[in-house]
Amino acid sequence: MVRRSIARAVSAPIDGRIAHVRADGDLELAPVVARWSVRATLDGVVTASSDTALTVEGGAWGLQGVAGYGPDSVGDLAIAVDGPRSELQPSRIDVRQRERILVGGGRSGAEAITRAHACGVAGVIAGAVPAAGLRVVYGDDVSAHGGPTRGDVPSVLCLLGFGSAELPSAIFAPLVAFAGSRAAIHTASARLFVFAPANAIEVSQHSPSLALTTDWGTVRPLEGPATLSGDVTFASEITAAAVGTPDGPTPAANVLAFGASRG
Image (cartoon, rainbow, N blue to C red; front, side):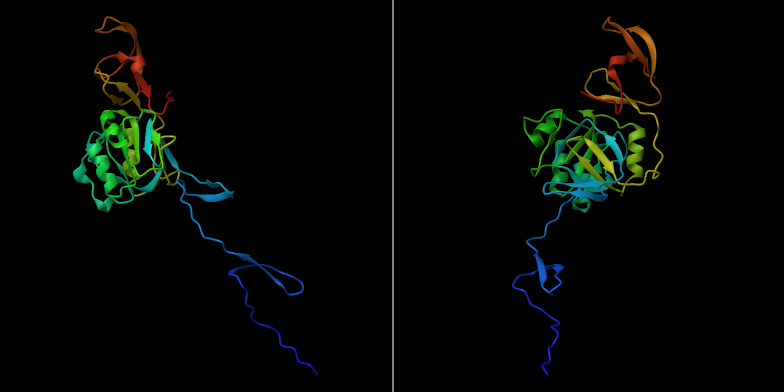
């Protein structure tokens, strides 16, 4: 009588995973060519993938800015100023804020932005950045439309404009409430995404209004509803529709609701 043993182990000439076991006992192996990983700017669930892209679906709280510069960035939000009018000071930035997104109040200068980048900060959010500072950091070809790039440069999101600008309380207060939450800056669309539940905070249903200052050098928030006050003759002897403010009427053309479409 011939005794046959049943093999309990097999060896293969390549490394891989068992993809199929045939009826005759043969094994089909799928070789592992390489391992790779990707980093998305949105937390969520991968719903589709191809050779060139992954589709991720998830929820987030979003904030539209006016311009984004540098690569997309991801990190925990951190408040680096004392209030919405404060300027982000280089002395407030160190390596302990590595991989965080700093909220820089009303203004962030070139020195603070470059120091943040040198300390490994993921990105900087500010009401405004001086145009001269943007040229120092990103070169003379930088524009007001933003500059998405994959290069080794800082990630900056301008929320209101250029120069300096006080952040409205309706914008600054939610950022403070979200401190410590995971967030991302998408520079191509100039948007901030905060990954938090929809009911994490109560957000005002009324968009704050912004007005140009008298020297046209920056913008300022108009707290409370902006109301039209009819035609007014200004010091320039031009008569135009005006919006009433605590400081007096301002041309309606110089007032814009934050979040409205911009050309």
